[in-house]
Image 1 (spheres, one colour):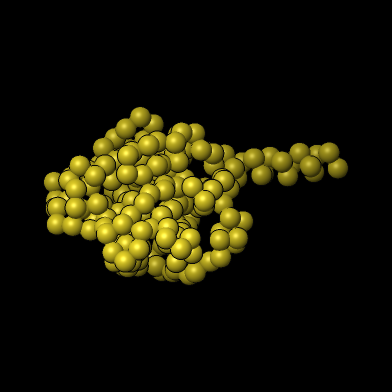
Image 2 (cartoon, one colour):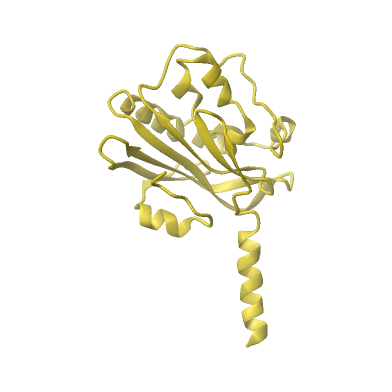
Length: 203
């Protein structure tokens, strides 16, 4: 019986390795809840009102920072460097937009997802920000896959969007991080059950 309990503990511990918030990085326009062992954010939080603008992202490059992955690690990996905080949301201010190009704001995304339904939802939410002030949470549910044994790959990505004026949840979405681009709505309660780290959706 003791061996069985120990076995369950080891399995659980292995699953949760790295699923801890090691550092909260304040990037002025967003907060990144970062895991050094995963070399990626567990989630980010930011506010958006009247997002969008005309600044180009053409010459912007992702900045390597303390504890993050390296740009070269993504080369030929088959994954995009997917923004959690969308760059176009802050295209009205070049300094703010530049802040989104930090590897504190990146997780590996399947190109079909990143350039497909994920981008579609980014545009939808940005348009909604022209009507209401929004609080946006974006995160990952990591499995065991990694790029080069170092950078954790999300099995799922998720978004929660709250209307700050009314306090109502506009969207709670979960996306499969693969070529299917599968996305579905999920209750906040069910999302929390899937997460291996705490998220306070009131902050």
